[in-house]
Length: 406
Picture: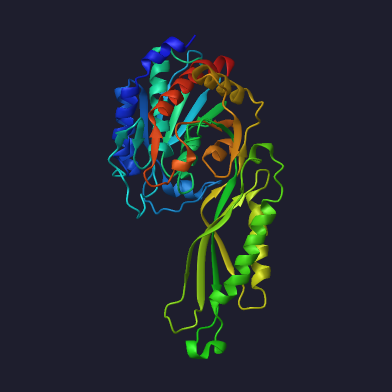
């Protein structure tokens, strides 16, 4: 039924818009450009300024890692033919991580198209998904409109906690299903692990290095704590019973990303601060995993000095799951098979996404989008052009059927 509609999706137009969007690394600039792109496609688009102070006081506030004094969100809507039909939301983020210090073959913010790929920071994660959704919605509108409303929520702040999607859902959460076109490598992600950002501080007693025994090294206090955290990671990953996570080598990793200690080479360091990420298994609550972490740290540091200080800052990602038998999953698999000739394989992934914010609202959701997660945050990030077109075709089919058969 929908195969002839693919003619409304132009590969050249998709690449053009993605190239332009990659050139806007600042999230506010990217949102304004996406607003213009939506209008250029004939879509109804509204850009909203969010109240940060109110969001930070709200129940369920997901945390932040990047300092900000403003936040915007964009709503692109294709009205449904039936006001009472189930509504579908597509979520996409336009904020990106820094390009890093390693040299790129292609400038990270000047998109390069070569050998069937679009290179640039944010190409895969996830500006290609946003562009694919925009064009799918425009094609659905030209085809006569979907059964129920289809809304694209384009947000910022996903990389550092999800405050953008949190704000968007406070404006509108009346949806029967959600698709997030994050890069999934052709798979259909139905379960995501959780992730917590922690800060750990250990103190000791300073002394001249020649009198080391007169001091207490905060670094020395850290070694048994580090070993205890390795044991905690092992326990969190001991049960691989969840079928969607069985293929992951390490579903719930614990990683320390930053560590600072000491101020002078000949002084025993009296403070150590580290920050890291703690994986949260599917089926576990954030509170229970926090308790396990704090207990492991407390026990390892006992008797060696003052109690350790643990704070939970930045993104606090709960795990999320949609049953593989859910009609949304079955519908997306059917449309993927229609476009590619094979159904998408349902999988789980070890990273957190905005999916959990929709799940918290009782909205079933999945991830399916162009590119591969291996490209996310990587040097020379790219997305295959063919993947962008495939995702747009799948989203077009879903938009035209969800409210009646999804």
